[in-house]
Length: 363
Image (cartoon, rainbow, N blue to C red):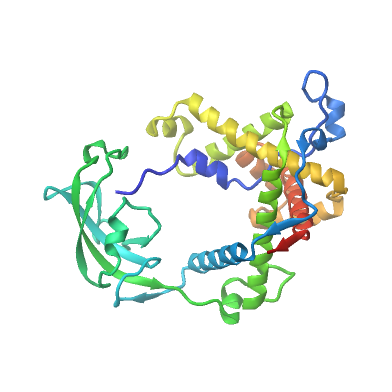
C-alpha cells in the first residue's frame, strides 16, 4: 500500500558521505591522467567555477531548513509522549494499525495488525508515503478510534498489479499521536551532548550549530550548480569512485544478508542498469570533488599532516576501531580504499564549505 520506493542502490549511493581519492590530475593530450600529473593536481583545468566570492541566500529558506533539521533530530532521539485524544491534523505523526480489503477480502501486503506488528506503524500525515487519498482521509479523524478509509489504488501500481485501479477500504485504528519535546537547554545537554566543541551546549548554541551547517550546505549547492565541469573526467579518479560506490553498496547488502546478484534479481534490475546507476552517481561525486578541489587550489586551501593526524583519531573512535590498522581494514572492506584518501578529501571539502560560507549574504 506504500508508494513505489526508489532502488536501494540509489539510496545507498546518495547516503554515502565519504568521497574519493585526493588529487585531481592534469590532462594530457589523450585526455588521460599521467603519473606525474597525479602529483601535481590541477582541478581548475576541469572546472569553470561559478561566483563564490558573494553568495546570496534567502533567510526564510535557511530558517525553514534549520527548523526542519532540528525537528528531525529531536524525533531521532526517540523521546516522545503518546497523545490518545484529539483530532488528526496535517503534519501529525500517528501510530496506527490497518487492514486493507478489496471487495471485502484482505489482500497481501495491505495489513499491519497488533499480531503481525505489535509496535504498530508510524505514519506522518502529509508525507505522501502511502497511496494518494489515504493520509488525506485521516485528517480530522478522532485519535484513539477505528475508522474506515476508502481509497482507490493508482492505475499504475508496480508493487501489485492486481490492485491497480481498484477501490479498497482500510480499517485504520489510530493508536496515538506522537508528541515530541521542544528544544531546550536541558534537552540539548541530555540528548546532544558534545555535538560540537565550538558551540555552547544550549538550545541557542545547538540552533546556531545547525544554522551554520545549513548555510554551508546551501552555499555549496549554489556554487556547485553555478560551476561547469568539463565532460571529460580524470579516468583514474572516476574508476576509483565507481569502485568505492560499488564496494559500499555490496558491503551494506551483505550486512543485511543479501548478495548483490540476488538483490538485483529480486528488484528486477539488470547488472547493466546497475552499472549505469553507479556511473551516474560516480560522475556526480567526481564533479563535486573537482569543483571544491578547484576552489581549494585557487584559494590555497589544504590539509596539513597535523590536521590529518588529529582527524584520524576521530575516525578510529567513530568506526569503533582500536588503531589505524584496524581502521584501514574497515575502510578497505567497506569502501575498497585506504582511509587517508577518503579522510583527506572529506577534510578538504569541509574546509572549502566553511570558506565559501563566510561569503554568504542573507536576503
